[in-house]
Image 1 (cartoon, rainbow, N blue to C red):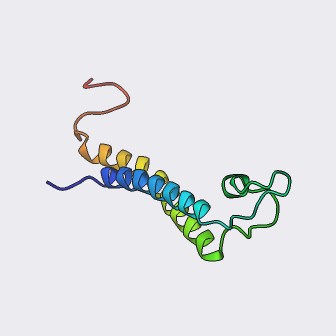
Image 2 (cartoon, helix red, strand yellow; image 1 turned 135 degrees about the vertical axis):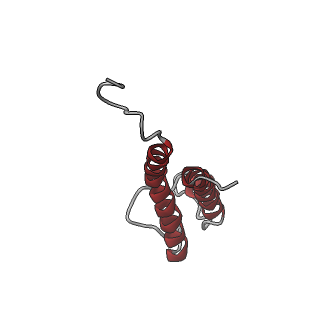
Length: 104
């Protein structure tokens, strides 16, 4: 049996969300354990880096990996309802009208 395109998109969306989440966790866990200057603990710098222009905790390769994963996931999110709508139109009975007077 042939899989529907909308089903493939749905699987790719779920897989993309999981892959992006796993990549984020792995990137944060491998981040430089620079201690927080205020408390001296490393946990805040690993899991809640300061919001600034300093992106030293993530390498350019890791940033591109997240951009590509998130981009593909967003494309699949947009394509999923479009594919489902096109499949519904293809499966519809051509003699049955959706709008207007039915059989009159």
